[in-house]
Amino acid sequence: MSYRTEPAYRHGTPSRTGVLLINLGTPDAPTAAAVKPYLREFLGDPRVVEIPRALWWLILNGIILNTRPKKSADKYAQIWTKEGSPLLVHTQRQAKLLKGYLNETLKAQSALPLSPTLSHEGERGQTTIPPENGGTDSVLIEFAMRYGNPSVASALEKLKQQNCGRILILPLYPQYAASSTATALDAVFDTLRKMRNMPEIRTVRSFHDHPGYIAALAQSVRDNWMQNGHPDKLVMSFHGVPRYTLDKGDPYHCECHKTGRLLAEALQLKQDQYQISFQSRFGRAEWLKPYTTATLEELGKQGVNRADVICPGFVGDCLETLEEIALEGKASFLGAGGKEFRYIPCLNERNDWIHALSDIVTANLQGWIATEEKEVCAASRNRALAMGAQD
Ligand SMILES: C=CC1=C(C)c2cc3[nH]c(cc4nc(cc5[nH]c(cc1n2)c(C)c5CCC(=O)O)C(CCC(=O)O)=C4C)c(C)c3C=C
Ligand SMILES: [Fe+2]
Ligand SMILES: [Fe+2]
Image (cartoon, rainbow, N blue to C red):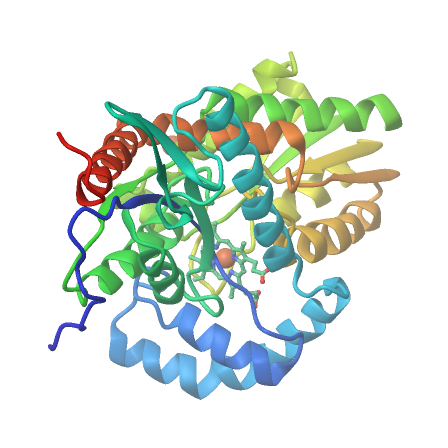
């Protein structure tokens, strides 16, 4: 392997801190032609489908990629917006809102001088540091998609070009799973492997029990119930994974159950007022149970009049929530005899969620902002000396 040539190293340039949000990814358009390469990349990932490669290659290329793209594209077409795929649109907005809120918070805490031209009161008077050292924002935020665009490699490259020497990686999955979180981190490390001048890296593993995340979920449910009244049952539906991953030690199932329990506690729900289930089963193998579709059908048959469904494992609405739950799930429940079905939207751009996200980031940046401050001050002093000031 040959390692990339890096931009020339300049002594004394303070490096910056960046945050990279990573979500799953989505096709570029709601068409079979755009869905096919996305599914090829996604389902070709050995973290996602763990069966022997040669056998899987035959099934994927011989059957799945010839049938699924068209069916998936038809589903995407039902939820696509003028701005694009909901998953991309929400992730983009979350990154933008986080950037604004986080930097305002840091500015208020005066962790760093954040004006466009950073000033430093040196021993011999005021010295001005050009914007290249900080600009208006102290912490840079980028987002990437594990599959499709913008790629993890391109987002890391963007951060490096802005001189980020410290990067916090935050996969946007509250619950850890090898098929979501670990593969997002694999993509980061695969990119770093090719770098000559690697940034310092920190990773967030999961935030399934973060108080701010749980409080935002609970408030989103309360807001909904204030407007629409209470259901007979709250179904908390999480994305499924194959059952064997639980048997092999993946903590995903436990983290989903903990999120569910904490959310129920925050809402003061009794055991019979809520139900945890798993959706999006793929293929014939057993996945985590109970399945969401079967649960909704069962509730309808049992004479439950109204079911509300929330999907706490997704922080932004996407195909899995808007099509599979809000449309298909509703049809399953009403078809089985249920009378009223309400889908409670994901956290998306809620203020309380953006604040929680900012708290998660701030907690994981501990020490880095202070490092940045020291480097900025040292650079300022060096520049002052170079301009003729005496030490
Ligand atoms: C073997 C298959 C799959 C595993 C394992 C899996 C895990 C997993 N996925 C998410 C989050 C999302 N998945 C989404 C779509 C989606 N998921 C699978 C299959 C597996 N996911 C497929 C084939 C698809 C594509 C759509 C389809 O053809 O049905 C999405 C939505 C993407 C979008 O564009 O809106 C998300 C988000 C998690 C968190 C996870 C493990 C916990
Ligand atoms: Fe999935
Ligand atoms: Fe468990």
